[in-house]
Amino acid sequence: MESIVETMMQQLLSKEILHEPMKEIAEKYPKWLEDHKSSLSKEEYERYAHQYELIRNLNEVYDNDAGNFNRIVELMQKMQECGQPPNEIVQELAPDFDLASLGQM
Image (cartoon, rainbow, N blue to C red; front, side):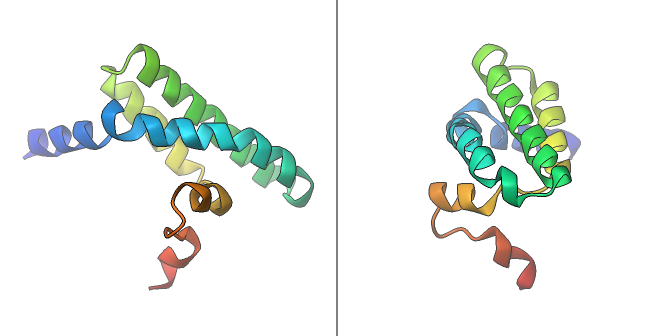
């Protein structure tokens, strides 16, 4: 059973599935951080800046060492600890996807 789950996770986290969306998110972060710095608390800004750094690290792994599944999982877990990416960035990439409404069902 464990190998089935691991195989599914490898497929879901594969370069073919996640690299393009992660590159697009990374491209939008610097401007978003700049535009929202004054309206975010110091803690929020640092959390989003750290999340952006993790996304950049993930993209480097996809570019240079896509077979390093353990590193990909580690970075994804750290990104998840930072919470959701800014809803405005997600809305630009997937207009029909609203992170704010996910917890309201």
